[in-house]
Length: 267
Image 1 (tube, rainbow, N blue to C red):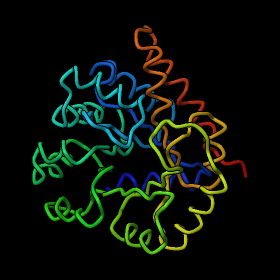
Image 2: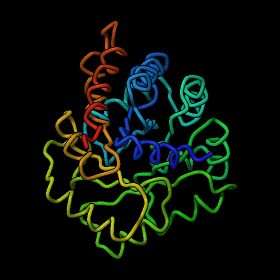
Image 3: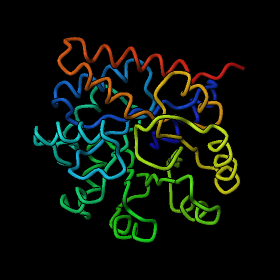
Image 4: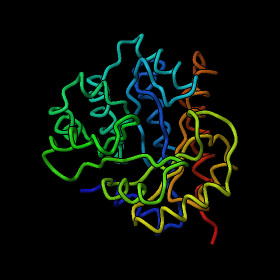
């Protein structure tokens, strides 16, 4: 069963776009992290990006860097993430994407990663720092095809390379809305639309847009152009600002519901 394909097809039938929510696994601690994810699922999140904490998250801004630091202090590793996915599968059937840098996968064992991720209940992986030309090192170890490699397309990616990236991808493509790191402010909607038009001309894969999306208004704007909207730093910022709040999971759930409402396209 391809949960990603089913999710995008169902959303399209319902005139909705995918709300893709990112959280760092184990932030602020494992039990609270699971409660947060459950609240997000209960309030409309369509796809979960579960971040593997890493000591040098070069593509991430300070908010997600600090979330990784908090999780690493709790000794959260890729093995922990696999265990968390097994627990998440007990309360949701939404697609789960492991969001990581390549180093944790190398430390875990490249040949063991995909079979273990599948067995845990994951649907794919997004690797921030694995170039297209070197992805064979990972995918040549894969035992089945029903596990997605989700690749990033940057604002500076030329059309011919977009086509190559798309051809090597499955599940969906992640269009980065701007140069820089996650959590930076401001959206250039005209530039996003331009990049979307080019991507649509080279692939039929769903395209989700992330980086710099923080308000429901941002979500609605991007949802009018893309198949999905990725939100990470805004969720992690809310966690950080309310880290000792007894109703932290509920706060995240409420914000998730606000974002999800903005992904519904009025016909």
